[in-house]
Image (tube, rainbow, N blue to C red; front, side):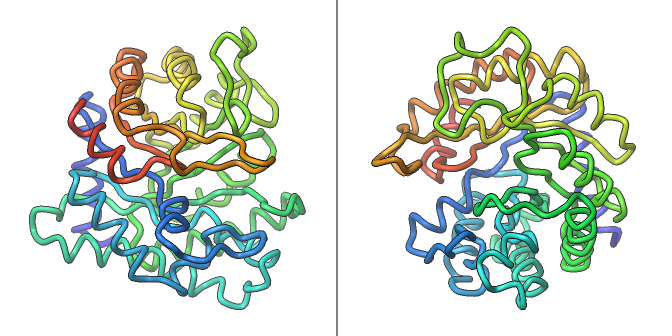
Length: 310
């Protein structure tokens, strides 16, 4: 990693370890769709970096202008298996490389005042079709993906929606092959969310396995610098954060999502007002999260309200 990138990330993680308040960006994929980027069949917003690069760049620029210390590439849906399901895997390298470049371009365009902003390569093991690759294929595909991201300029790898042990471990093994720090994003509760009192006493990842055991597994990897409770309903995020804090004394983040069901489909747009979202932030901080942001359905106006609160 070039010296400038090392110092940029070092500055962020040192602040995080000191307990300073860190502002993470909001949702990028859902914001791409909201702004008109076409969704790929079985690939959601994964095609936006090539179909609508201006939209992607503008979203990053909006979050940077609001004070985000970290922006993640629009690569949640650009894993090889997702792009294969969407029929566009021939452009796997281009989607992942360009997505990282667009975040870097947005930072550069913001001027010297934004030079501290860190660009993360977002990596998931999700499948929109339900046709998931073998663990060996997931590992190999992820090694290829994060190598592209590193070479494009990503300064850390942000794991998104780790929802079970086997695929989390395969993903961690893969991303550990490149010399970049890792943040682990864990997800609890169903997509549409539910009330806190409906959570079991032992909190589980979305598709199985104890949340706390997931933390114990992931923190064995030497490149893991931070954990985040992410893409979980706003109403259960506080309890999830508090649980992680019992097992992890390092940097801890919270970036929730908001959604509701309309005609059997999950709809994120309009699911929560900016003021209502920001009102959760003090409780997340009290539970131990010093880094806050937003996930699906949480756009620039939500981050504006969040920035004012923190």
